[in-house]
Image 1 (cartoon, helix red, strand yellow):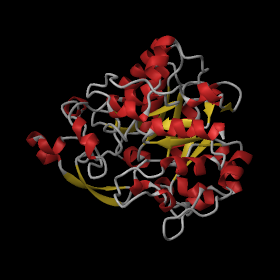
Image 2 (cartoon, rainbow, N blue to C red; image 1 turned 30 degrees about the vertical axis):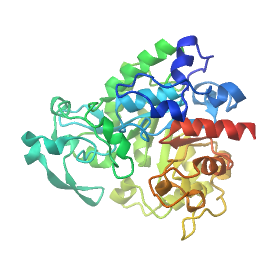
Image 3 (cartoon, one colour; image 1 turned 180 degrees about the horizontal axis):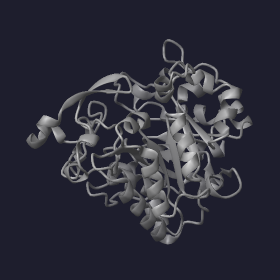
Image 4 (cartoon, rainbow, N blue to C red; image 1 turned 120 degrees about the vertical axis):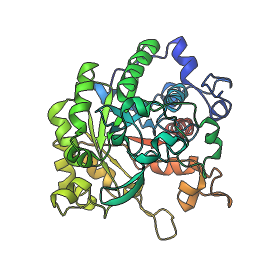
Length: 393
């Protein structure tokens, strides 16, 4: 993942923000708060895997989940830019879904009723429909039924307003970004900061889209080649919950690849579609991890695969997943740490308000102590401070 260099003057001012700084950022993204502390790897050294590419990233790596989705509507340039300014090591800038005319855009899901203002557009009322998305009946508006020009008339909004009412302040401010726009942004930010900006990119529902004649992997590879970031040391992780999507990408590009893993009893949809009986539990055995290592460099497990919870939501003893994955030569970037009580293990909830912040630092400390190589977080400033605490301990 690109060689890390010392922060230059401009990058230092833009890249370091505290939680307080995040709270007072202006609606347009201009920094109004006081600068926070330097990022943890700068102040405390931090570790690296050694070597070039992703092995040059600080360890543990802080990955901004869909940008700073704890503070801005996810998958918008407002969210991505704020994550970069806070100092995240990697920005998840793209859950990729296609448009009707074959462009790739960044949305959490192809159904966009919950993340855009499409329902307020009477001209698109007739596009509302119900589809089977990976076996689940889903009603709403779908990107594959819109041209890119039509999607560009929409504006993003907060996906979980009940939990993050403050984020609704920014509803309507940003449009839906395309993957090509993300690559252009990444290139420009890297040039201005004097160091590579790293991104994580996910192919969403690839089997579903391939059956619609909108295969994702070839489109991703074409754009990566166009921007010269399709190589082994290129600063772009590619990830998917469908192992066959990663296998297909492995034949098209040389980027670092990550297999995402949901709950232990779940089955990747490409397995369901092909009649493969294996579950995630099979994939995280030593044999399953060795197979993944034959075509990928890492896994992105849900945090519950690293430390499971009991029936009351309290953490149990860690599993052997970290040790087993490392033995197979794989890195682990688990998901997702969020600051709100409702998303934290019961051990770290504080008070009775589900939307108030709990003891996120305590939860981070527990997860980082397992030896994971990085972590996805909606609140990357909190993650960076927790990382700094962890390295100092």
